[in-house]
Image 1 (cartoon, rainbow over the protein chains, first blue to last red):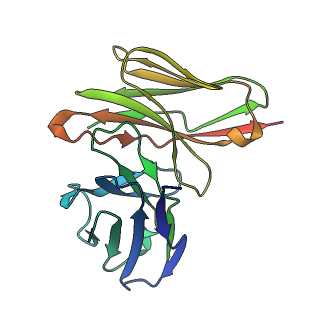
Image 2: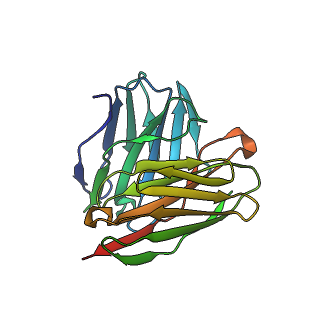
Length: 113
Length: 112
């Protein structure tokens, strides 16, 4: 089945140690998004790629970076994780920015120790 | 940006009907989405409204009033598996972004 896959499902990292979360999609969608969701809060958009065009949200900390080497893959790099970065990280895709409905991956729950 | 408001938590009985409200303020409204999110899992798409009125899809219906900045999600014949968080998301075309902003969600607890 075509889908959005995030690995790993759970990630534990040390304070200050760089960590990379991955997302892949078989939908051949143009747009890929990364959201951060903390407990009982709304998913917060960090950035998105429209094809190779990177779009950063104004309030996304510099600590968060992203790469999209090809259509299928997108990575979220956290350069120096702090305790406040512990959250669920959701990857989503859509055919176009104005598409009606996103397809989300199962998420990666990040713990910082 | 959007200002989206939903109740934090609701409880209901199995077999009953529940209505989850969402109010929003936005300058360039371009659609409202409802997503279901079970604990620890990703959101799944439920419905999309861009015109006023009711959209029915099985046990779930979604209503929109653009003039009032108001939507609701109606769940009928509640089942235990409907216990989840329900996220309202509003899309704004201002600035050409077209990317929805999510509310913090309403946690629905269905009990026997």
